[in-house]
View 1 (cartoon, rainbow, N blue to C red):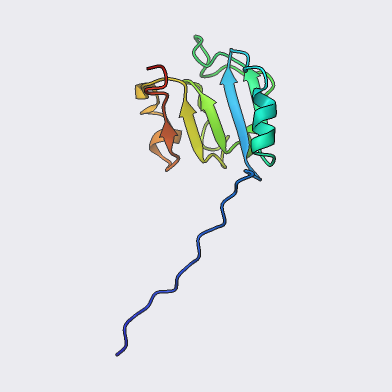
View 2: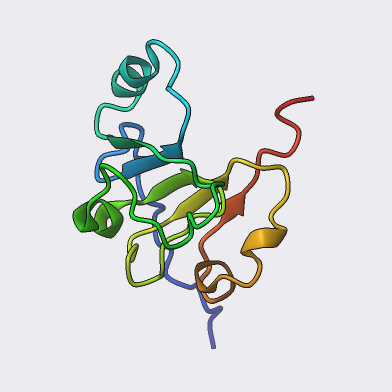
Length: 128
């Protein structure tokens, strides 16, 4: 009996242009000058939505978000936010959530955190 050699699957080619990805940033802050242009130049396939929305304000968890449509939620793959998180059903293509805080205790009981394998990262150490 010969040695078993498993089929080797070639890794997917890197998506350096981020084709097919949509970034949604929820912040009440203005983006730095040139930020949009920099993203478009570096990642020409990335769709980008920025909403002037304070995810930290009281009642934000249920508040409608200006300039963010159901289609935006349905297509978003990367989210930058605070405690305002979508449901799993709202954001079925989500692949990464970046929290604007150093800690993440406020998301531990959220279904999109505990019932999916979506990676979450924090801003821990960025202000050091």
